[in-house]
Picture (cartoon, rainbow, N blue to C red):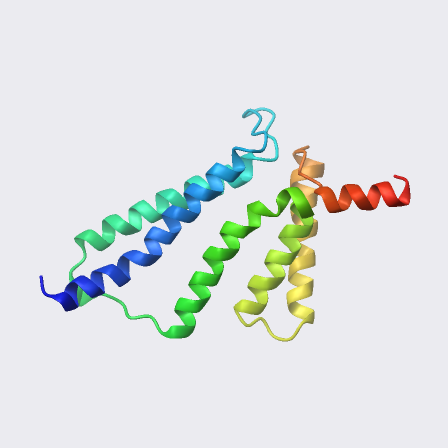
Length: 164
């Protein structure tokens, strides 16, 4: 193999490796929260599932790259690369802020950032999307599945301040 092919292969492997690393970090972070059981899931279950899915996708993509010829390689433009890296950073940072800000607030912020990152027009649509996602997650996990999602220290401080 000459240096051009090695460089192309390295660039192709970066993103599946980020999937793999992100998945591992999310699984490690999710293990800090109680997972529960199949019949009684808890707050750490969803991030754990997402982490394992990222690990599986990363491994599958790495496998495909190994067996792909260099003529099939896809070239990504700079904006796409920046967006992909930003998504990975968000996925890594998201579980780290659960304990501080809480599941619902972090999900609102992450959805808002992702909507703006992927050019959802203006601010009204991203806020509506983030609010709708947050309400859906709250209803589905907290109300319907009775999962105890982490409230976060900020919410606990707020409850303390208002006497709740």
